[in-house]
Length: 184
Ligand SMILES: Nc1nc2c(ncn2[C@@H]2O[C@H](COP(=O)(O)OP(=O)(O)OP(=O)(O)O)[C@@H](O)[C@H]2O)c(=O)[nH]1
Ligand SMILES: [Mg+2]
Picture (cartoon, rainbow, N blue to C red):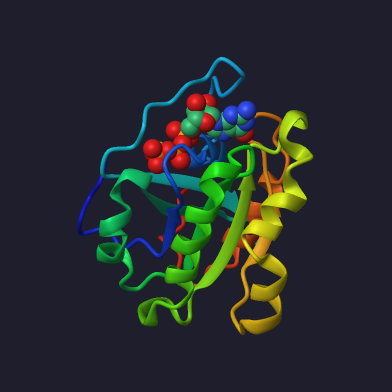
C-alpha cells in the first residue's frame, strides 16, 4: 500500500509499459513472474519493499516507489529527498525511445535530482530484443550523456523473465545510504 508518510529515497520511472512493475515485482521475489505474467498499467504509484543482505550479512529492506508512466507529468511531485532513480526503457519499443530519452534528459537536468544517482535500465533484454540494444543506446545518446555529464547514468541490461541483471541491480541499490530499519 502507498503510505504518503513513508520516506522513499528510490524512485522507479520510465514510460508506460517499459517494464517497471514486472522488474520491481521480480526484485521483490514475487512468485509467478514468467512468460504468462501480464501486469496491469500502474495508475498512480506503488511501493515495493525489496529485501537483501547488507555487507554484515544483515537482512535489510529498501522501499522503492514506482510512479506509472501515465503519471509522467506528475513525477516531479515525488523528487524530494530522492537519492536514486531507476529509469526503465523498453529496448523492444524503438518508437517509444525518443520520448523516453527526452523524459530522461528532463530528469537529469532537474535541480532537485542533481545529487541523485541514475540507473538506466534497458529492460526486456530477452533474446528477441537483444539485437536492438545498440540502436536503443544510440537513440538515447548514451555515449554523449556519458561524456558530458558528471552524474552519468549507470547502464544496466535486465530481463525479469530470465533474471539477467537483477543481482547487479540489487547491489547498486544496496549502496543507498539511508536505509529503512533492519528487519529480523
Ligand atoms: N518479454 C518481456 N516482456 C516484459 C518484460 N518485462 C515486462 N514485460 C511486459 O511488458 C508489459 C508492461 O509491463 P509493466 O511492468 O506493466 O510496465 P510498467 O513500466 O510498469 O508500465 P506502467 O505501469 O503503465 O508505467 C507487460 O505486458 C509485461 O509482461 C521482460 O523482461 N520481457
Ligand atoms: Mg507499472
